[in-house]
Image (cartoon, rainbow over all chains, first blue to last red):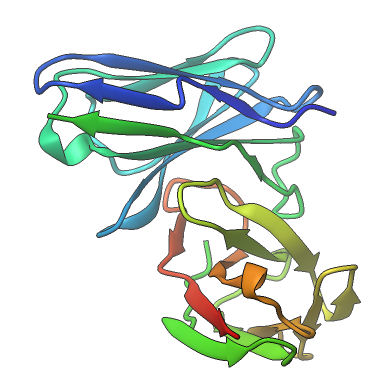
Length: 115
Length: 109
């Protein structure tokens, strides 16, 4: 099975712009979660989507949004970019269960640099 | 999500066994314990998962005492390629999910 794929892998934007990142989960996985990773804050949960609905949301401002399509692919959008948004954005997919037994499989991430 | 505490860093030498302990005092009855490995600029990779006692796979062992308030990841005979950050995660995805700082393992020749 192909793993989780994320596009693009690298991105450079300037302050005030917006960006859209894409994630394709492992075939059969219906849950997609997004994380932001920075050296100072570590790996922080952004949101989780399941069956095209946001099921959980982390403590991030409304500039961060996402959606999931009927084929389980997901996108996240960041509007009005700030320098502090520079980070590695990771997507993870898992099977539909809500149990903590459902292992998350991570993609390689999108490295975003905001200038 | 149960809060976890791990050592910030550990050093080891090639060929040694490494044990990384994670404390999770408020683990819930139905929580599983999962360990991930992360290399720089890559996504975390699943290593092992367990609920109680001992679990072993081809890369690691996971020891969980009866009270489940801690767990120990054991890496046998580490090599330089095992240098990475290791995260202990307890519970399921929810609003407050955070991986924490993890344990930075450095394997020396």
